[in-house]
Length: 200
Length: 272
Image 1 (cartoon, rainbow over the protein chains, first blue to last red):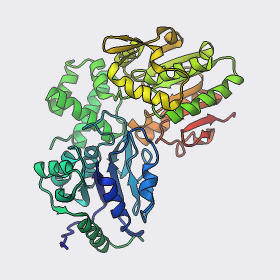
Image 2 (spheres, rainbow over the protein chains, first blue to last red):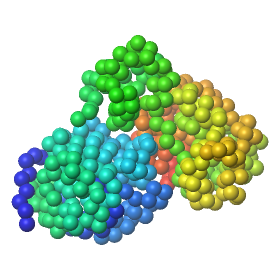
Image 3 (cartoon, helix red, strand yellow):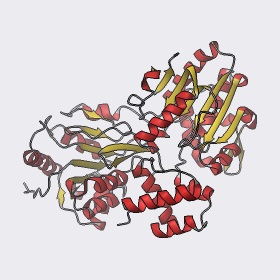
């Protein structure tokens, strides 16, 4: 397994994914321990007009509870957040969420780009952006923003993606720190947890 | 990377306030900044040029406002909300002769059309008065025209079916080329009104105020002020609806409201 160079005191992990990412998220969340300290913010493309169900399905095997943030909720340590359907999810200075119903981007709302771009702006080098399998280009520009602010960038290895368009789009426009298979991602979270220390 | 610095944001916000009389300083900065970036991108200009254009009248107030505001909406958004509204309106109608409704931030009118259909199907339309307001004059013109692109009908129709309306939504429209024109007779009860929630003062009293997915564009301070304004515009016992992911629990006037439907964010103003 790879070694990771954790350069900064990270404040958040933001994960984006689309087609095929549900199973990856389930695997990750079934191994991330209850006392994992960093907030994890997940943006996953989902059926726009099914408001509930997704968070429940994702919660089934997750160790931590998952919640959909309300507008202007503060981002808290130790929490796992899921972008609600049919809203874009932004991070505001002062570490709060805000939601919006602006136009879809790449036919997506929530758009991964928006969450990546706003969290990169707020957390700068202290964030970790992870882009998983997906069938469109959403998230690529967002990953570029994370990289431009010197955050840590990871994409799922296109070779094992259900749809590799999304990680490949990111790899095409920006340097990515790590290209990882799911097993390696699980290992990454284990090492990150060790590095950051448990939630007090 | 294209970005707008905090200082630039302050400068453009000041120019807009001085030139147009709109104060965006308490808007949620992430979406406000994104709207500004969108304008810069559309016109291929930088912030400095935008400020110049605003100051030199190269932008009309109306054009600027139209580009900065978000006008994405759909009929019967959150069908379960409309089901709950239908039942609460039925209850409300039993104790009132007339029902006054305010759509605060009505955008291109899809929510108002949804309400008109609900009221029509409940047989309450003749007892209703509706005010539909928005900050953006040009979007109000569009709402008044009440024409919907054919390509967006699919989503409206899908929502309406999940709402379990009593007919086919297309019955309320006449097809005109690539547009669907909404039944004009239903629009008679509406008065459209230009209202900037930032500086509005209570202008009337209502039985039901809908302000859904509008507060999300404001920061907490402005949300608090707008909720106070809305509370002042509600009769005791009146209802307030906010967006599915918005909250009032933290605001100054929270204690004036009790939830009628927690999931759908519908509240009732206490009798004081």
